[in-house]
Length: 352
Image 1 (cartoon, rainbow, N blue to C red):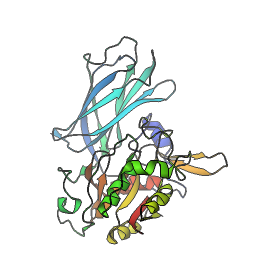
Image 2: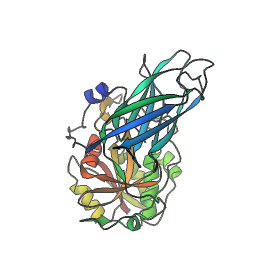
Image 3: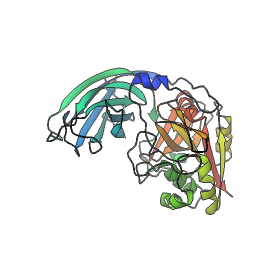
């Protein structure tokens, strides 16, 4: 699980479900941004890789470290055709790609643009046989208020403990590194690689595939295709409970807990020196329920992504993000808004 999926802002608001116990979501801090979106072609052929660049500015200055998501969905079926997620550089620009292989000739589609999980807008695209993949650029001018999210580290090769200043009330687990997930939807396994590495015996993300297994219910196994397109909830990921037996096979203990709107158990885990996987709804509470054939209910949250929490201070929390192999810092309001989307699902990793 790596990124998010919405179709329209109205739909996003309509499905604001917090989870089995309805945990309330905190309101994330926001800021006003202006964005210029350049699309390589608005009438691409099937199978094109269409370049898309998104420039983000606030008060005229480039915004570095902003998370930019683009999604291409069919107007008729609401099917996700393609998506990508990148982070803006020091110039405020993120470079992304839309692949039209999942489309069909004549498909009228909507290209949605989101910054830090906030919907900015979009434009129509038409998949057209024989259309150009690039070279027929169109520029879209967007603006709006988006959640405020910041990176903590410019040099992702630095250790988490060495990369942060001494903020008020800071608690850091030393030696938690970074790692880039090797498959589009393998963030859970990549996060285990980060956590086990911090404990001195790094386990490859690939080792978990067959141990965890597969299931329609992500509490029981991996849901969907781990190399599938990010977005939707068919190719999705896996929840904390299914990872515990796999950790035990390598001599680790996995302790599952749910914060349910309270950061105290997470802070306690970090204070105990246990790197902790956290399941985040990157776009907030967008979840809905599904059922297994025996009637077991479970929550699915578009935009689900997993990072490793390794520190906190009075202002927020420090995370190692496998999506891009970077350290991140979220203020408490923003973090709780995302974490509460999955009821604060967490997995503390320690030696057994």
